[in-house]
Amino acid sequence: MGLFSSSTQTIPNAGEIPNHIAVIMDGNGRWARKRFLPRVAGHKRGVETVRDLVKLCAKLNVKYLTLFAFSSENWRRPENEVSFLMGLLMDALKREVAKLHENNIRLKLIGDRSRFNKALVKQIKVSEKLTAKNTGLTLTIAANYGGRWDILQATNKMIDSNPNQLGPFTEEDLTPHLAMDYAPEPDLFVRTGGEKRVSNFLLWQLAYTEFYFTDTLWPDFDDEAFQAAIGSYQQRERRFGRTSEQLSGEQLSNA
Ligand code: IPE
Ligand code: IPE
Ligand code: MG
Image 1 (cartoon, protein in one colour):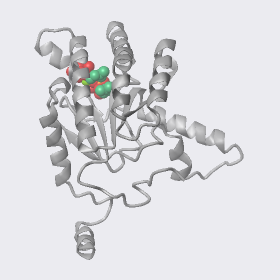
Image 2 (cartoon, rainbow, N blue to C red):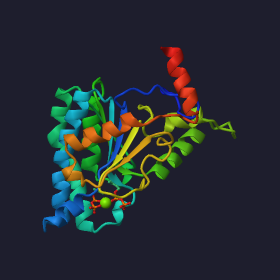
Image 3 (cartoon, rainbow, N blue to C red):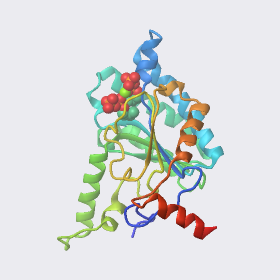
Image 4 (cartoon, helix red, strand yellow):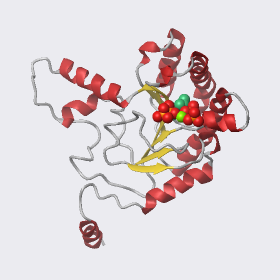
């Protein structure tokens, strides 16, 4: 059994404030090009948005914030942009981890680390270890992450840990091996930058997540824009397969 219930096996409790928010931080390049700056200037500016958003989530009592920083397909970008992004991740970890720790924030990285240089792998380990026992917000950075990679690595680990079992396997066998075994499924998914796609983010975990898309570019995504996303979430009726009538019946019986 995993730590958290599955949205397809049981009906989750959904509160006013999403417990877990997953974000595709998109539009940095376009933000920079609009200002006749190099694309990487947008990435640099995007880190400031991350800082503000982390603060706001901690204040709102969001328990898990998961940010897509680099996809398994982003290696296809020009080499100078890829190395800038890797450097930015390294610098941000070094610079921010003490502050995160002070604020009782637990930091996690998900993704395939095998392509990272040694110094970055080390920095990730140190940062995770320092903040491991913190009980406030859990901030997850997805770097060299892909939803398909995650499902496959979990499948392989599941098979390795059950060498005598040929199947059939269940959700409960698989989910403890997913990269985010320590978090419930996201309640709210946000994508900035106008594209309406998942780009190989958390494919398994998004099964019943509410989606919110905005044209706002990531560096412009301020507290007000974020509150609008939460406001939209609060208007949704999360049915998890049931009918609307069943839900209002439930509310009556709870009243
Ligand atoms: C998102 O911004 C950041 C990363 C993918 C690392 P983009 O760099 O994709 O910005 P656009 O989509 O080109 O504007
Ligand atoms: C998704 O953005 C990945 C991250 C934000 C890290 P992309 O800009 O790479 O996505 P596509 O290529 O437009 O789908
Ligand atoms: Mg993009």
